[in-house]
Image (cartoon, rainbow, N blue to C red; front, side, top):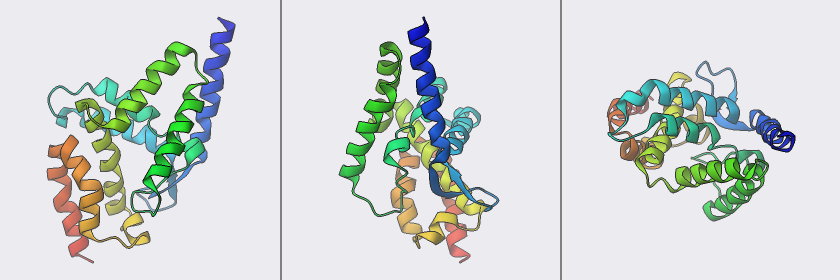
Length: 192
């Protein structure tokens, strides 16, 4: 029992480092950039509140679990902003190595279960993972609109880029949320 609890606590203490990973997205009040720990909590809350808009067959409890762990790899690999310039293959390799190390801190049963959940999120093939990915993408545009443009201004992106890089994933996993958000994105860009 002591060894299991030691391993679980090692993982939980390591997960605290996610609070030190700064993201490109600003808080809605534009006072500062959010960190990845805040982001993970907030999108889990998004899933809880917006779950009624999920496509049929989505298990919101599984989605919330995915969202709580999906960015833990950023402890080692850092945040890669969706509008940033980075090598996707290198990012994937760094994140897989991080997943091996971080989930490897846990007892074997929890390690395997959480790693499988993280792999499912990354693959985005199941309806749960597609909705989780959509929620992950849905939060940032809402923050950008609330904060006066946020990362859209920082990265000098056009509406078409937002719709291609963010909208396609939201539309795939949460079409109702995309139908609500897309006109708001268009209105923000039209007003600039």
